[in-house]
Image (cartoon, rainbow over all chains, first blue to last red; front, side, top):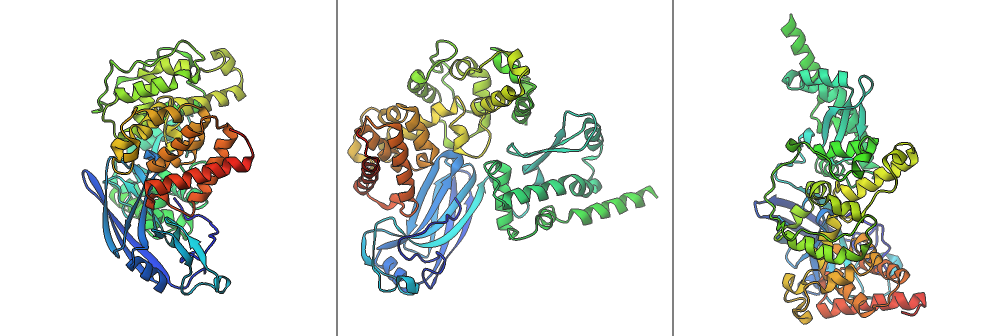
Length: 276
Length: 259
């Protein structure tokens, strides 16, 4: 559920420069055993909308959507802070959350303070459910063990043996995890060293880093072929939470992997010193 | 992980001929025990032979739904469940309902055909991915979900759907599965995610029984456009029904076609 490029028939706060003012939402989710708590906080600066909410003619809405489970639900409040609860049995994997202010009833001759000069002097008929302000979107992964700040690489990428005896590694982005397929010879060598702590940085730098950077590029370019895969959605959440959406993919990949080059070189030095 | 291997083998063409065999042995360590309750006595789907049409879809959908009492949405979006069912439990049914065209030799000797067959198998025998679109194509999931989404809405939301009364619990399932185009157009556009809207759309289609495929498509397009600005969840049952019936009526009238 991403921001859609919609041309509204009336001024909407948060849509380009339609209206002066501000509407922001901050959001946290807590995964419990049986339910998920959605903690939302709203910050609004616009006289008209503040008044409409006071009069209950408009509400803040938190709109939750989970494409994996055919789930969509709207929660509404007139409070600037509100917690909503949903059962943990109704969502799975990637959950999108959108924030809006919507009319609860027909607002005849609607006009809003601070509207762009293009709208000045015009009045509009707004219906119940119509959007009055856009507060952005976020998303989370409905899985207790998933931490977008410290993601386990294994939740995104798996290394396995391919079909060729020798040759370059091949990447399969078409499944729910990214599969790096090593030749039989490479996989045999990889299997011998993969558990060693000092080697983790080397493996991350040489095998995982280029693949992750490529995968991040696919996410940033909103690749249509892979965007429904779990790894894509997880990576999207990781990039958003770590503030990496505007970064170069190779830099982002290094940050997600927590400095693989440094860990690689340190590991190699450690191994060399141990050999001496 | 084993499902990924199976998919790999289909994509590479290695296992395509397995999907022409009634019985294939899968390694026992590739299967994990599940706590999902199955009424296996009930799980008997109807099929006559290969090339089975959609005529038994409704009956089979209800049978499958009732064979999994208490299955949650989270469980029902687990691709492993549906992949297991299509490959093992419901293998004969999948053969009948979604048969492959051609012999093993024909498939092996034609690379273009191989790609088509692989796509077909990946669509109907697997359900990987994080989207309801993929669940709509798996031979078993596509039966369970429409029943779940439409089963007795008055039990799910007694207050909102109070006016419907407790009638046939599959009243709306029957409409959804009455035409392939209703199923595809309604669920393809994500409308199935909002139960109130889904049921009201089906009510409109129930009233307008003779509606044609083009008209359904036009209605869904108009409704999607309408929903991009307005969220109908804030409306009363009466308000929502009026809004959806108005969009539907307008879309049909605009096409200038008689029902």
